[in-house]
Length: 305
Image 1 (cartoon, rainbow, N blue to C red):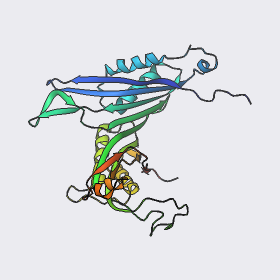
Image 2: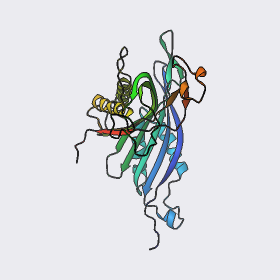
Image 3: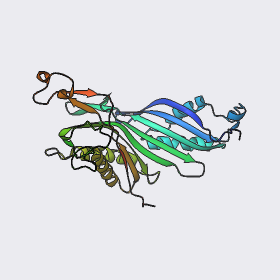
Image 4: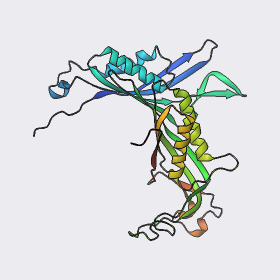
């Protein structure tokens, strides 16, 4: 059988835009985002014959982002993404589906002597807020919120014990014979949290939910300030974080997924150096970029099928 075109789409990526909202009291509020667009529709002939008769140029898509930003505050990635989807579907009748992905880079207001500055800011955090909006013609937008690179660290109360190859596990003796990692009763635990969540409706309080999800993640990871909380596994900690986020933003979130890639800080004594070069108080570590563990889970409110 001869090959044929079974799917096609195109768009524009890495469109960076900043909107400066100037308020009547002289306070400024910058919102900086990066936007990707992806279009589906009646333009297969561009692939099959080379005709561009129904192609909305990607440069036009870029211009659309900037022109729409003139009439929108960029109040949230979700709302701006829906605004872009709506415009494209309304303007081009041969486009059948649009996906808009948005990343926000937050600016933190500078405070001096406890007083917020009206128009000076700094990059205060490593994380990026994300959103992905998909809308087909005649349907409501499907909205997914998210966060990436939320870096957290706890320096104690994390353990990793009784895994395969050690007593108390499902297989105390690893059949492969390749388990070399020893058990850890107490260790540091750091990760760069990645998470996405599905909103129940396109009218959810997006900014409020984002703040609640982020706070729930941090509180469940860290525990109370004076006592902390034990973490017997990265899997259990990540799952508890998603359950807390679901509850904090009920009923607006249907599902929430999380990934917690390990950021390893290795004790000096694990390096191949003589014993006299070890840190006697186990207080010196060396970071490594990889290899590292990668743990995922999803918590849902929807009924099981």
